[in-house]
Length: 496
Ligand SMILES: [Zn+2]
Image (tube, rainbow, N blue to C red):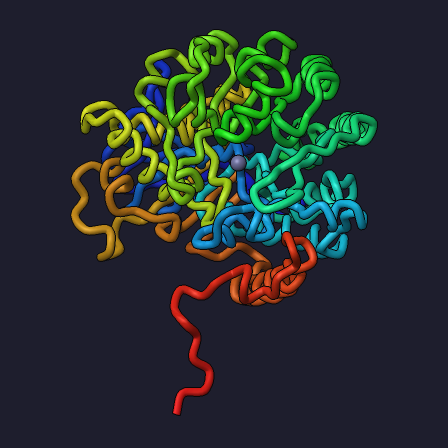
């Protein structure tokens, strides 16, 4: 184990502690929390027993670590689309020429492992204590590999991050044949091989690192998975009792493609093939019948809520793409379980809660539709519930000691009204000071033992630049990089 666990009881105190009572978070002013052997043993005002160590966190909020159901686990390429659209024109859909020449890996195997280590350090830096990594398959030859996930398990163990891991797989892919013309290519055998590898991975890695490493299934996205792949994934998820995550209802193109292929919208189709269950985790569910331009008529929200599946809500990536969930309050009131994911850079759960709150109110046209606590619940309890983990996402005796300390004393945070509302108004991932996972201090005052954030940052930029340089090869008609990614303003290199 990379991070060692202190012996004896550890006490932490701060101006505010988020405790938990009768299924709800509670706020404890001037609170104390004690953990021992990785589990919380006390949350309250004054602990009377002996302790081995005391940490006074001062003007800070001690709360449960965030559970990230769609945790950014690579060098994010989605950001390249920020001002560069449409996707098919800007190298985000493979051109036919590239696919026929045989897709290839754009990173060396060691760089894929490096990205996991780098990504995990950023997650910890942002107060995420449980992560279900997501990465793009766009720069891959096809699916994710055993080796990079074996590396990810090692990185998680070395850093002390709680993870659910599984290599992503798929049966199909989209490609662009001519401007705006998108087609599908399917190779069912390849998808099933991917599932077989994922199943072996789950069996081999479940419970490693003293239980810090768990496993999951990750069929990539609904429109690139065949019925056989999804029904077998659901079966394996049931047999192994592991979560299964599938991107679904994330774009109008996807919804229409599923309708065209199966004669049903994504929720109906998933229900009818037996995919939906309480083990299913579904990013992003923004495009459902009747909203965001989907004309199809079906009780999508009811189907999803009844199934017990969970939404992985990633408001930042959606808002950057010009869309939002319509709306959080309606989904919540339908009884759908809502957890959260970061999905794009920065992997900042606080920023995601803020955008989630604002877009929820905009979509509902009502400032009272959603409160700060709805988003904080989703980022903690919602994610833990999606994983069937009543011992995560809350701080009460018996829960795992997964703790995030967020400073409330930086001048930028302004005046504190209530710590959660202040966080949703003025906080940022950068305010996360210390992180405890499973009773180990994995970050203290911004320092992750053995990690040089600046060196990693430089390494990430170099790898990112090398990857961007390969875009022409995989962009329709192969324009030069400068044409694919246009500068915000004309770049003047030789001004007199
Ligand atoms: Zn996503």
